[in-house]
Length: 94
Picture 1 (cartoon, rainbow, N blue to C red):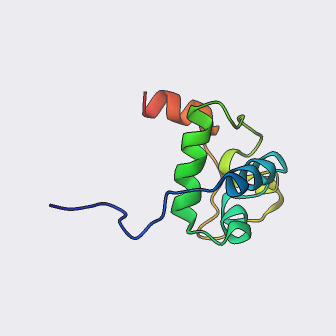
Picture 2 (picture 1 turned 135 degrees about the horizontal axis):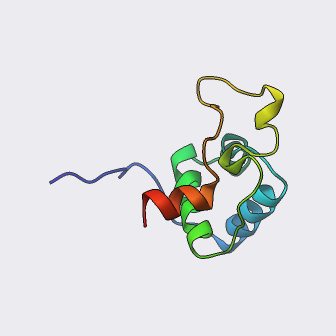
């Protein structure tokens, strides 16, 4: 038996959810949100997927990369987005 991502914590408090949603609306990059919340980037990514799927966050310019993706704020972890978050999950994971 293999348990994927058992080292991650997918339990979120109401305060963390509200903070995540505000940071998302503010346009922060997913990695910056993870730093703000002191969470692993994959925990925040899964939360973003969940919140988008449930309609709690909206698709935004730059998708998970946030408002600064076109300003050269890229590294190995910050690549140019190819899809908006909602479109990606609707087409690839429907």
